[in-house]
Length: 248
Image (cartoon, rainbow, N blue to C red; front, top):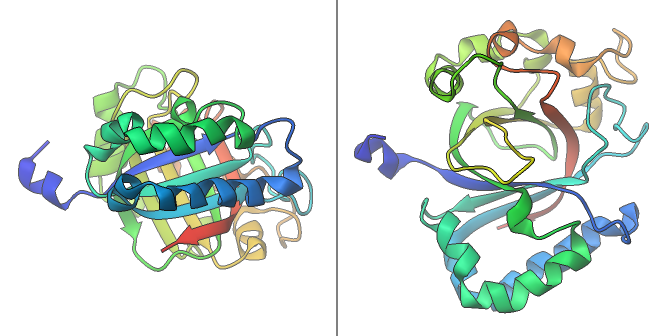
């Protein structure tokens, strides 16, 4: 990467989380907030993590939130805005994190956080304040497409083809995140999309979910053509979520 462009880059760690099976779905958001609060005891975490947005799976109007094609296999998505890329490696070896936060992880999640975290570089396609509802796409590239080719399309091509669908006209904010480090086993995604909406109803209306005038359709059918050209939609995972905790 270009050092000059690296200086302007925005880096993230993104979770695709399952809750501890012993934890009721309705208790997950509170347990997660409690876990996040432990970060206040970790001075290095406060210095290195600039922002946190915890999003839990919407379960109203059905386990998929009333959006066909949304996954029911996971419970939440977390966005951690990082001070720099080095944080993504440093944080796993930070003594305070290991002593305070890691022992609490199995109480909240199905496994340790490192096992379901992806490190990404952010590219904003539509810049506006995020709403309280987000549809995330964890994307695997098409078979036969190299990582270099995918990254060029996902992170380097003009934004217009990725926004060229009626479903995205109402999205407040659209972000493409490129996975930049080797993913954990089972989380071999190449990119992560964020589509932010003002409300769950607005997202359902956009993507043909429950209550939309178009009737219920698979959300994949509403995506721009650029998605079919680059992404293996069948093996990609889509999460329909609402924000449960955000700081600052």
